Amino acid sequence: MNHDAGLPRVVVFSLGGTIASTNTAGETAGGVTPRLGARDLVEAVPQLQKVAELETVSFRQVASSDLTLQDIVALAAQITGCFEAGASGAVVTQGTDTIEETSFALDLLVRDHRPVVVTGAMRNPTLAGPDGPANLLAAVQVAAGPEAAGLGTLVVLNDEIHAARFVRKTHTSSPATFHSPTVGRLGWMTEGRPRIAFRAPTLEGIPTGVNEQEVPPVALLTSALGDDSRLIAQVETLGYAGLVIEALGGGHVPSHVVPVLADLASRLPVVLASRTGSGEILRETYSFPGSERDLLSRPLIPAGFLDGPKARILLSLLLAAGANLDRVRTAFEQINTSITAPIVSGAHPTAGATAY
Ligand code: DAS
Image (cartoon, rainbow, N blue to C red):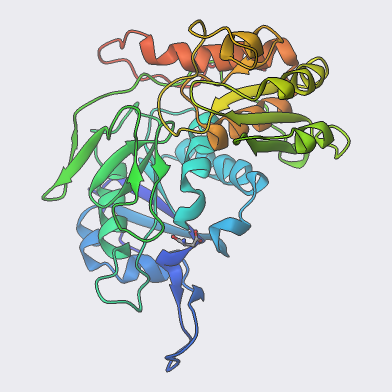
């Protein structure tokens, strides 16, 4: 690829998704599927050659619904290897359907101050105005520059820069689908320059020593009006190692569901998240049966500001690292207090997170 010695070295990993999806040559009907690799994507954007010395890795070529947490653990190891070999940043291109989860997993797994930037596209290359090339260019500009150092894993699409731990996909087709409802975006792109308005403290208390072969299954269930708890009662029988329950509002379930959750929580980690998609789990406001106070006394583990899919990623990685119930509880607490930690000016957090 580009071998300009004066430019920062950025490694682009492609995993498939819309950004890499086309028809076969001459085909006009039928849907698109992931066919392009990292090199194809980079070669389609000549402006990249002025931004970074690029290395390309076609890591997977799938719809992002077919990615697994094991894939992301393996990807994190490769990214860490690239940083050890002197890369300045890493870019991951993939399907947008699971970016909110994969980016958070990378945020937890890659312990380095250098940027990891995840991007994708909502309009595939066969459509008018595909957004993939612009998103890839912006992602490389963020990964190559000094602005994003120490910010953990970022998601860059539609000229917006989001922190992995807050970002969500919010629309099925709009190029402006990614939002961080609880905090807003960290920054944006202007004329090719990353502009960072907020710096979120880096995550502490993260699982290390995660075994790719041993990521246990964690269930994610959403509470709803008149929920009868039948699925929750099956969680352990089905072999799940833990449960994340996306409760109503600030952390509430129908009162008759409480004994089922309490019984499960006496043997497995059960994490309480909210289905609202924004804000934090409450801790001390309501005391009706099925309220957050009731559930946290059982004792469910509060997900804090993490939504259900992100809480499931954290719980899965903690269990894959061999964490017991106490350590799971502590890690969720640490992640949630990380947002109130003071930021030390000039500090670049590197390895040294708590080992689990
Ligand atoms: N929704 C598609 C995308 O945005 C499919 C996928 O996630 O792979 O890439």
